[in-house]
Image (cartoon, rainbow, N blue to C red; front, side, top):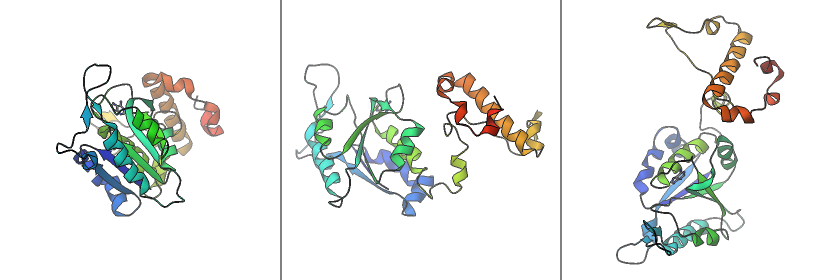
Amino acid sequence: MRIDVVSIFPDYLAPLELSLIGKARQDGLLELNVHDLRDFTTDRHRTVDDTPYGGGAGMVMKPEPWAQALAAVAADRPAEAAKPVLIVPSPAGERFTQATAHELAEEDRLVFACGRYEGIDERVMEWAAGHFTVRPVSLGDYVLNGGEVAVLAMVEAIGRLLPGVVGNPESLVEESHSDGLLEYPVYTKPSNWREREVPAVLLSGNHGNIAQWRRHEQYRRTAERRPDLLAEFDAGRLPRADRTAF
Ligand code: ADE
């Protein structure tokens, strides 16, 4: 997969050189290019923002530097290639979920446009639809100062789903949101730590009982912490052996 990120703070994306995603880049599983939006301005001050039409607080990102930057990124592909997906992080976007991460992990090319201030001139998104599949995406119902932190989260969530990035692909199966429930609690040695025992079933060696206990814990946790997820959860999708846990 190839990912391009356009931002006025390219250094914000430096953590993507570390850990699993950094290794995936070194191993050639992921190509990631960060572009400075100001390189696509033409004035002496490298201006990227201006006051909003209609008035109001804050500044809006000017359309032309964005069109220049996105056109350059879009043009950098073979003629027969499909349109890349343009992800615009915004609290006004559709919600980013594990399902979105899986969907986007299937794409060959993703481009992220990091807005700052009050956002990007809306006409950029209309214009970009001619070159990209445009998806405004929100991490959650809160407001960040810009798209960069959201891109760090999304690239990590998507990148770890690419084949070969996570060493043991089984660890992707039994984690929160993989089956609509939160993950079960985990423990390691010692079995008694500061007078706290690991649940006995985990030491029993009985794999059936362990699987059932884990399912039950997933359900209990989800009911307690995320009742909204339980409402959507369909126990009928689980393998028959797991359904007895409920
Ligand atoms: N930019 C600002 N707030 C955001 C959010 N909640 N999600 C994604 N991008 C954002």
